[in-house]
Length: 422
Image (cartoon, rainbow, N blue to C red):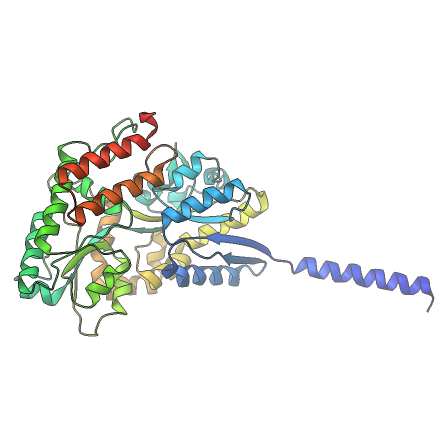
């Protein structure tokens, strides 16, 4: 064989090999999220999507500890061009990313297709992902704070597991009776990972988080004081001591706490920590003023696209629609028990069966459609404001300050971080 022929054959072989490699090349979509305890759910969704899309590789980043840390990381990464393609951001944090110009407009990506509500998304959930009328995220995970109780302790204290208190005073009174059973047992506890529960209490007292024009806080008033006084009264009555949101479930599972308010997700976490005969009770969020209560803020995460690459945006859009669609929501329900944001998910037998077998989730399912927005504070200091609120509530939980002083300090510090104060 001549040298020329050998050269031509070699060149053809290399070209063919390159074409084959190109044909099997996968598009990588990098996904960022918070809370390591949810990794199994995100991985399950990624695996299911990749099974349907063999030409796509979904790569999960190491999760942030919470939404606030995740938000700060995304802002830093935007400055050095290291953003993920998809980010799961809390409902009260992602609007800030939109204002920074980091998030793709999904209304534009959805042009030519049915409106999102027509695709099965719950209208109340879609209200959480709109900025100035356009959709910038798809609701993925939604939940409201519910009352979770130890059935045995509730009964011993004269309570009814099937009729837990629906108002804060009744909740506080029952906590006091549980604590009276044994001084080593806390009647209940309050945890503060962020401002979600604080916003819940403000809404439950009939108040608002921001003024009507959105430029000032809405709780520097009698309603705000009622909230701080309600927290203070509960701490004193229940005998509780402050715990972190990660250690609190352990105390409850050990039988040292009678009740607490948090996301229904904790039921999945706790079920693996308690004895088989442990009896759970659940109820709606206990309102400070049931007659004036506006509902509970819907917490959770929206799926947003941060990639600027047009082709990746299309693939990322397919992925987040999968995650928030029937199949993805079925995986989420099975893993964490959150109510689906897409009505089509209820047509999947496993989803319906889950809620039939888990009536403890009923309060969350009932509260989500009537939920209020988890408000994001204006300006560039929204994360700092959340921490400021949390830190001042923590001072009250530690009984280091009066309700009046805690509210005064909180409102002064928050205003100093808002644009209107400058």
